[in-house]
Length: 287
Ligand SMILES: C[S@@+](CC[C@H](N)C(=O)[O-])C[C@H]1O[C@@H](n2cnc3c(N)ncnc32)[C@H](O)[C@@H]1O
Image (cartoon, rainbow, N blue to C red):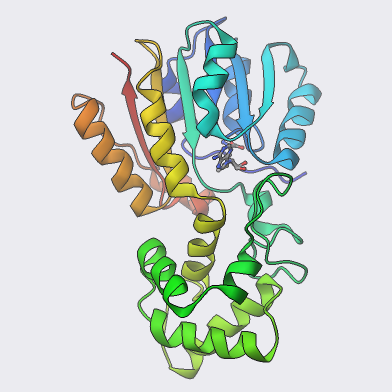
């Protein structure tokens, strides 16, 4: 299986100062890339993920490696952090938030995150609980509502004419797949001879994903929850979106002004794993 490649792995492990028999929370378990390294070093890990598929993938992978003894999977939103910590009922040595999606989620057919998804435009991390989908947003939200998310969450420069095109397309035929939405956005860019260094659909997909999964709201909630963690606990955030990173930076400046400088991937990592290019790791220690 092609697992998600963990970003800033050695930097994260160094910042966590992993020690045997100490307790760590991986609040964004994904495919378990970071967790596996913590387990190998003898740490005890509580791995949280909202996505039941990723929780299963990581649990099976950890079992295959014979590392399951110190691993505790938890299906939850990380906004439930305070509840999880209360249940653990022991001091936490470190906690990791590796934000965003895993590469498997990003690429899979039927989840709606991919530009090539021929089956879906869903984008929910947990379809057993969440009700709002990207398909519903793109087909039913008003011009003003779409404008708000495209500009505020993704700084889409051509939001106005692009939304006019999307509304005209959806009136003709509802937009039900990632592939159709990506085609509409790409056509818009190419008809106007607008060149983009990234796929033109990137921003629209990002705005939808953030909205469906309430990513900014979750981040704000959990940053505040970390304030009630035990003193000494190291908190690490890896962000891939400049808006999220700005938010984390401001929070740290305000609450933990003497924290380490941010860490970005080495050139060698970005060559092997281009998805790491925009990653920024920030950490602080609860006092
Ligand atoms: C970038 S991936 C983590 C990859 C992981 N570090 C690894 O090496 O495999 C982010 C993961 O966080 C999960 N996630 C995102 N938001 C979440 C939330 N609010 N609560 C719990 N899990 C969340 C996603 O489902 C995804 O599996």
